[in-house]
Image (cartoon, rainbow, N blue to C red):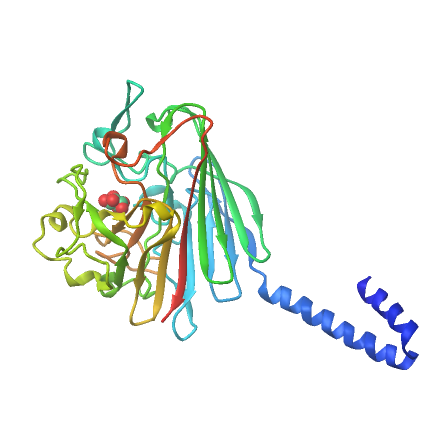
Length: 393
Ligand code: GLA
């Protein structure tokens, strides 16, 4: 229509011959601008992933941009099954640990790629009190509750309520966790929206509302190996964590309640430092965590959404920056990976071949009065955002 209008306009002011030229060149420029739009588009494509042992059909969504990044997310556990990003030579490769079939995810999965809720990290003895009423959760980590319970949000089926491409690709997942599911009070309606843009950033937006007072602490549990060589431990990765303080833990990885200064400890990542540099130090906290498995108290909490941490693999040049509005971040260095779980194309995932950067509130907050609150009341909106941004250097 535009083209026609312009041609008519052209006809009134110029000769037939020159109009012909004008229309041709308009056609060309329209085609070019269409190409530009297509070239910039971030796409999303749905496919069937499999059927769970309970008979649920699981879909997978591939979000793909024009900068060599693609992310596969399935409706089971909202799990990121694959994330590919370019290295410094422009070669796009897999950088997250994962399995190659649904069955394995439903069997034994230490949260590979999964959405974690209702409460990410540990709650001491699986117990907490709200308005004088004690709630008992399943103990799925020794005496403690971990990552929302045995099924949590990582082993449930999410519904894709929106899947669209364009300038960015968006996958919005929904899950309704019933009152007293895994022992938590209140019907909790949760939305998690994954958005991929053309700057190689993946946003994860978490939203929730409840009809009864409850606790909420949602996170994402992808294990990154930026080298793309899953046989190689992540010990050479250089980490930065913008945190002056740590949440120290006891032998069961439950916070002691203090927040300690990281200065002159292996937990000081305010300047880039290889994970492996001090991981074997005779440090009480490292011994308790069997490596790094701790929550840091992020700086600049009053700023809201800001830089939190980064990981850099010097061999491939891949650089991951994490931004969040959350008060804490758990760095977990795959200390429990023990060579029993299968890699995608043969072999098994060995000790420390992946690292997690889990943005969150501090562990055991429901029992720690001095920690920022994780309580969600009816009428309130839980809303938090984390970004995983990839580049090379
Ligand atoms: C979290 C915990 C770890 C471990 C892993 C999964 O990061 O903090 O202790 O449980 O999940 O194995």
